Structure formats: structure tokens, C-alpha cells
Length: 463
Ligand code: FES
Image (cartoon, rainbow, N blue to C red; front, side, top):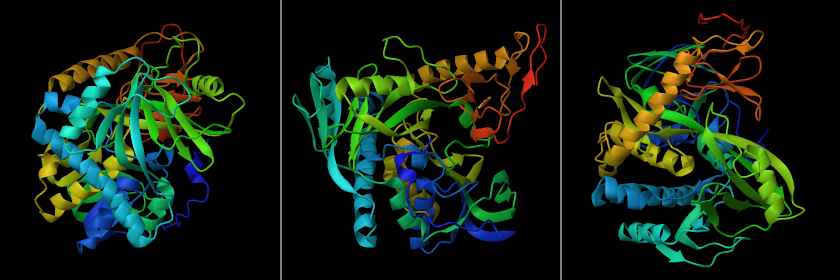
């Protein structure tokens, strides 16, 4: 299923790595975060090559709703409560600056990517106090925010928290414009990283600094990112014949929707759930695409679906991205991951922070994003939940399975995969790897395909 962004993006094909090479910086992953990081390093006079297992932008960059916004759900009241005003201010200013930086690049380079400034709104059909508090918190941190009771949605709301001067664009057209200036090797899969040497299936790259921007880091140790992130799936349909709002919307209630316009289409998203845990329909509206289809007909009778796609998002323990040094044991490795639902803005924030760290420039805003930041109460709760899923997934592969059933264990760390009927894939509840019907790898952190085999009544062995 192709997203609306994949048609005519204009991204130029690149050759694979021609053989061994030595460079100052190697970046693994040619999504928005990787390409932007390499671009900014080049502006600083530093050669950075990007390695991509598939094609530029073929990962999660193409599966987004492409909202560029500092409005990341109800984050600001929480940040002020959990950290302090200074840290919350850094989060706000880094993300607001990211919007401005996109605009600057689009203008200066004349990138034709449908960039438009527009408001971003959180809506609720029941809550007003939470939304008011969020607007006040954001405003206190320098964001142009307000609480309003009117909005352009086709159903009644109790209120909205509105951020002015946010933006939307076409992510792959933007990426094409920037990637043209970056040295990228496609169809070059990083297999192993030892010190400053990245081994690929096409040769090796030796570098002074290594940057991991391939969505979910495939290195387990050091860093232990598998223990502090899970993945979530969510669904998007592009509708014809549905009214398009000027602003971008996100519902904060259970089952809340994401809405934004693109050209003549409305992009309607929702149905988020942990990868590997099939959702249960509690409302009678269905799950995933079925739920979106039903909600679309309810709101815009007669509309029709022209595209559908799903996103896979890395969720951290405290809901903030990990951007900075990969681990104290590898000070010359860097990482950008855990963007949650906010990949566009977080990619730009990552590129700016990683460039500052690599060039040795002062970057006060880096503290709140650091993978080594303070461990909060929310992170502790997240760790407990994540740990419980992992223990369950790992212990399940030792259980007897029904005769004739297909058993697939995840090649990452061995959890039992779950069949996802909506997307016809085998999904891992532990860290979110996904495989197609034949066991071929779709999403990491696993690095290899998995083997299918038939189960039998008394089986207790692992793969
Ligand atoms: Fe880690 Fe499956 S993704 S065990």
C-alpha cells in the first residue's frame, strides 16, 4: 500500500557503495534525519556519507502525515511538571526553530514541496481544562498558543489548543531537494559496526564518527535501546470528497483522530496500537483502516478512499526522542531515534543537534533530548510496561503451540511473533520488528528474515 507521498517524489536513484572507503563521518539511514544531518555537516565543510539499505526516504519518512509542528500532544504541561521550565523551554524552542529552518531551506533552495504555514490544534470533545492548561504552558514557553472553543471540524468539540504558524509539506519532495546535495549510497545495508568501521554488504566504511539515524538502532549493546523503546502502528487514509480543514488537528480523547488537508485530499489518521498487539474493537467502529473508513463515512458521507498507508513509530519511555551520543562507551557514535508521532520536526531537531555535537559547538537545547537525560517517574512506568511485554513475548516461545500452527520467533531476541490480520504480517510485541507472510523482514530492529515452521502439540523447543 503506497502513501500519497510516493507518487512522483523526484528522488534521484543512487549507486551502491563502490567499495571500501574512509571518511570523517558515516551516517546510517537515508530518511529525513540522516539526510539533513549529512547536509548540515557538509555546510560545515565536513564530508559525511549516508548508507541506505533500500532507497532514500523508503523508510518511515514516506509513511507520515507530514505535519511540521512543535505541538506534540499535551507535552508542555507535562514537561514543566516533570523536568523544569528551562528544559521545557529547550524542547519548545528547538521544535519552533525546526519549523523556521524548514521554511528557510524551502525558500532559499526554491524547493517545490507544498510547504504551507498553518495552525496546529489539539481538540477534545469532552475536556476543556487540560487543553487550557496546555495552551498556557506552551505560551509561557514562548509559543504562540491559545485556547478556543470554535473550530472547523465537522463534529462538535469542547475546545481546541491552537498553535499559530506551524506548517505542513510534502516530505519526499522536500527530501529530494536536500538529498541532491548529499553523498548517499543506496542498496547498501549496514551489517555490523565495530568502533569506527561500518561493515556493509558492499564493502566497509571507516569513519571518525558514526551516526545512527535508521529509525530503530540495530545495535543492542551498548546503548540498550531495545530496553527503552517499543514501536506503535497507526493508520492513514487519503479521502476524496471530504472537506479539508485549513489547520492540522489531533484528538486527545480515546480514539481521537488526526486530520490535515493535502491538495484536494483529506488525510485522516488514527487507530494507534502497540506493534505486535492486535487492537480490540471496543466502540463497534472497527479497528485500523476499518475504523477510519467508518469514521470517514460518518463525517463525510459519500467520500472515497484513494490512498491508505500505515506508520511505524518508535516510542521512548518518557515520550521524548533520544538524540545525542549513542552511549558513554562509544563517545564517537551518535543516535537520533524515538521520534514518536513527530518525525518531521524531530528529524530537523536531530540534524541541528547532531551537527552541533559533531562540530563541537555549544548546543544548550541538547540536554532535554540526550539519551542520558534524567530518568523520570514516567520513564519508570514505561519501563515496567515495556518489560512486561518483553517477558511475555520471550516466555511465549517456550509454550506448546497448537498442532499445525505456524510458529515464528523473532530473529532479534527470540520473542514469539503475532499474526496481524489487518496488514497480513507477523509482528513482534517486544520491540516491534515485522515480517511478511513468508517471514521476510519488513521493519527492524531485527536484521534478518525469520524462518517459518509448523508447530506440534508438545513442542517446547525454540527456533
Ligand atoms: Fe526484539 Fe522481536 S523485535 S525480539
